[in-house]
Image (cartoon, rainbow, N blue to C red; front, top):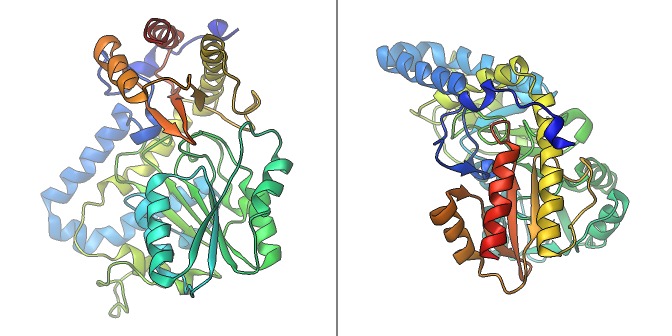
Length: 390
């Protein structure tokens, strides 16, 4: 029983969230714990105390330390990962560096994040290429069936595959390692959007085997906003020119890290590095608070919430109840006649519940995030509100 799993009393107090709001939308922008936010602010203070010393003489070494901590967390080498402000910016850089020709295809799914879809449609449109969204019907059943459904979209014109590790609209964990393995065997570039993955489920980049992998640190890893990363396998790094040409491009002697990949994408002029430098504090927060166990408790609460929402609506789940398919975030169908925009507004205005509602594949959905600060009482209040409003 979920109710028998004790809530760590100190966890909700570690966050800066408005206590008057039932916050069930961690997946959109995350929530930064108080100690991590304080570390972030301290980095900003250090910058302002002596900007020239900080940016001119210390920044390179400090960023190297922050990269090393993140690389260890992701199981990759420090020279294979670089910080970006968000995954969308990183994918823009990657997409604009692909040498696409008219008729080439990028294969993806119909479960991808809207900003990524827009990026790929723009880049493919400029090149005369095609962005092919392979349908993945619901409910999903087994990883094997998923892989076969996705791979059915491969054609002789396919140049790369792009898919989410955990999807934004449907909150499903896709078997990306299996797709990456097939892509390698077929000689195709494999690009993974892991925005929702770090901090929610373990990320072992060596085992996943992607050529390129982007992730957000500000979501489930709970680092400050504006912290994300790009992993690039050494074999593809030379293909990636920077979005911004600055001091890191063909650096002068004595400048930079000694790694072209890092210098190209990190050396982009004056900017606030505090969010990146606070990522090791977020990783440490996870360790100190045994967040893997917190995540397991959240998964059990998410399973209960999903079952009860589906029982209320009478609609079937979109995947089996297992951490193979979802962890702390899930999507549930709502009745076809639901006005999702009105329901979302009323949940917030009348019940002070922050939860995303939207239409995907012609069907209204609700996506619920369960984080360490959430309780069974939060879920009960959501269910009570839905019973009234639906």
